[in-house]
Length: 326
Image (cartoon, rainbow, N blue to C red; front, side, top):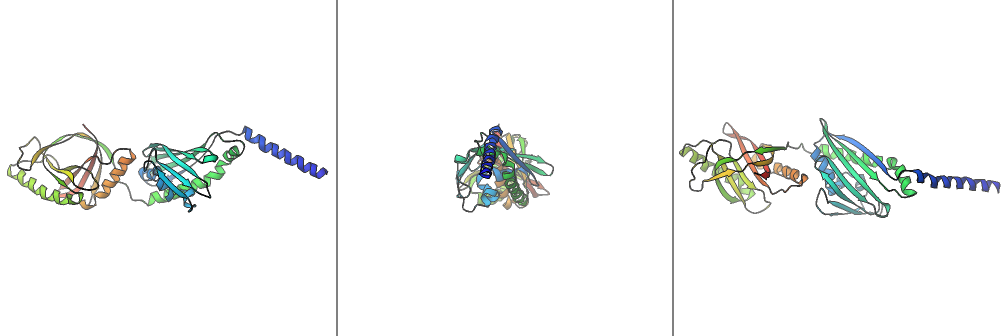
C-alpha cells in the first residue's frame, strides 16, 4: 500500500508540474532557418510566391503523396491560396497576405482546430546569390498542449525547414541563368514607319520585307537614320496584332505611300538584351512577362524590340516593355 501511495504521489506531482509549466510558458513561438542559394532572387522567389510550386520542394508535400490540393485566387502573389486535405497531416490552407517582389512573402496558415500561424520568407541578395530565411510564427498558443508544441517547436520544425530549404536550393540552382532586367527612362523619337496587322509567327517576315522598303526609300530621298530600327507593338497570345516597324530620323520627314510618320512615345520601361537568333527571343519575352507578374503589373503592355547592328549585321535586340507612357 505504501508503494502504491508513493507512486500515486509521484504521478500526481508530475501531473501538477505538467499543468503548471504551460501556464508560465509564452503564448508565442518562432522558429527560423536560412540557406544561401547560388541563384538569382527571382528564381527562388517564384518557387515560393506561387503556391502550386510548393509541391516541387515542400517537405510537407513531397512526403505526402495522398495529399489533395486545391488552388484558388490569383496564380501567385497576394491573394493566392492553397487548400489541402490529407489523412496524415490533416486539412488546412495557406493564403498569401503580402508579396514584395524578390524581397518578402507573408502567408497565413490555417490548420482548423489546430490553430493559425504566420509563415514569412525573406530574400536578401548578395554577391553569392541570395540568402533565404524561412520563419514560422505561432501566436495565442492554447493551454496546455499548444504551449508544449510551441516549446518544442524548434526540434519539431527545424528538420522540416532544413529539408525544404535544401530542396529549394537544389531546384533554384539547377535553373537557367536569368537575364538582367533594368528600369530605364526612354525619350520620344521621330520616325518613318510602316504599320500592319500580323501574327507573332509572321513578325520575322514582316520585319524583313518592310525593312527593305524603308531602306530603299531612305536611299532615294537621301535620309539618314538617327538610331537603330525597332518594332513597336502590344503582345497578344493569339490572332493578329498591330505592329509598327520604325526607322528613327533626326527630324520629321515626309510621308510616302504606306510609309507614315510615327513618334515613339517617351516613358518608363523595363529593359533586357537578347543575344543570338531572333527566333529564340520568345524566351526573353516570357521572362520579362514573369517579371511583370512578380511586380503585379499587366503583361500585355506595349513593347519595343530594337535591332542593334554592327557592320550591317544584327548583333543584339534590346527588348523594352513600357511600364508607363509619358
